[in-house]
Image (cartoon, rainbow, N blue to C red; front, side, top):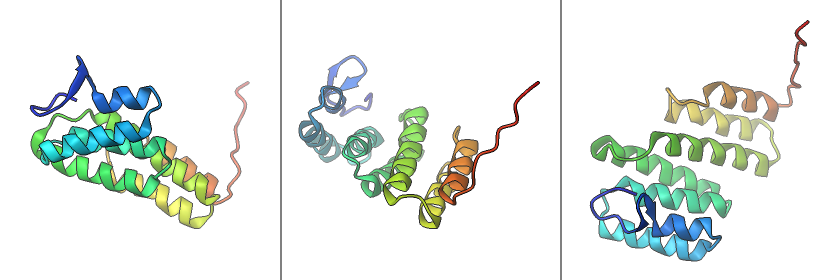
Length: 143
């Protein structure tokens, strides 16, 4: 976190991420809530919370927080785009897998391109949507 109200444990790492990296999910979540309460316009504690929710497999909350972080960052422009991208993609795939695949999982993964039309996982999300629909992958071996 690097926002003006960010609570950092060390340069570039928030208390929330420190707790997350140590596997202390409830403590990480509490730190995120403190950061959000301190500055509701800072996208970073919201994005941190999305990452904590991802570790907890709370996929719907991840998606909601990523959406909120994207909106807040339109003004703040301080969030790490790669973290937003990877968190969103991981949550969509994880949620789709938790659903057991199928059409609902495929449609969920297709939300990626709507939320991040210039995201780095566009091809991957399309492939996962096909997988969730039951399409087998075909690989052509180079000769």
